[in-house]
Length: 294
Image (cartoon, rainbow, N blue to C red; front, side):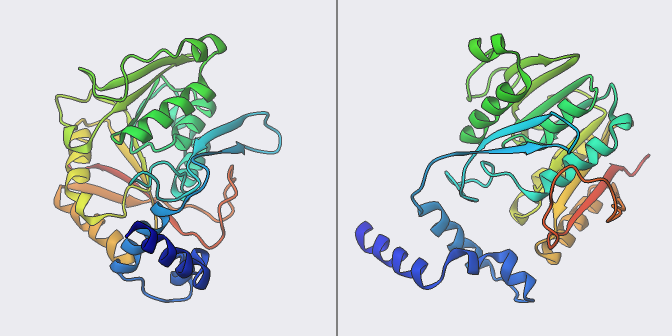
């Protein structure tokens, strides 16, 4: 049976290259993409055989010697998750953080759904933070995330000794890794959104999240987590969303409103300084969230 599926897969991919079936390509042509296509495309991408990982390198600007190297999957879907691949919204959110470094100075930051770590690593390198906590919940993503954090933010001695507090299974406080980058305390946490309560996660100044709005079945847990984090009066959330499906995005915003969260879309001028080469045809909306009581 497996051999038959593989032969069918090869025949299908030869007839219809995946780049032509990309949802981004279809949507750019005004073609509505149905859920079944997304599901089957993800399955095909998961089946493809290729090198497990690649390294991507980002130089933040022409005058900077700062380079970020990220280990990630070549596939957009790998090991049943999208979290092993960097996405445009992570670049856009990282760009926002660098452009607002003064607002983030000496602040405590928690990122939800950190993936391979592009947003957080950029922010730690470019902003003088008090602390930054990466978080995710998929074992393979957490393992890669810890590697990327050590690769980019630790000293040679720390890279050698791998200062893991635990492994990729949850510890008592969910912390897998703690290091210090200059004056910034850095942690990686195993943190499912369902575990985010007013008692389990300490107060922070900023909550960041990029490209976490694509699966409507996760909206309730995500919005409840954001509500619990925004319970503290000083806390602000900055969420970057790639606009793939307007209906999905509107459903997320509607769910946020039901949780009494104030939503303000941030105007991002097209002429803003950009530290990443974002594709011109990719639209990313950035939202500032606070409790409605503020």
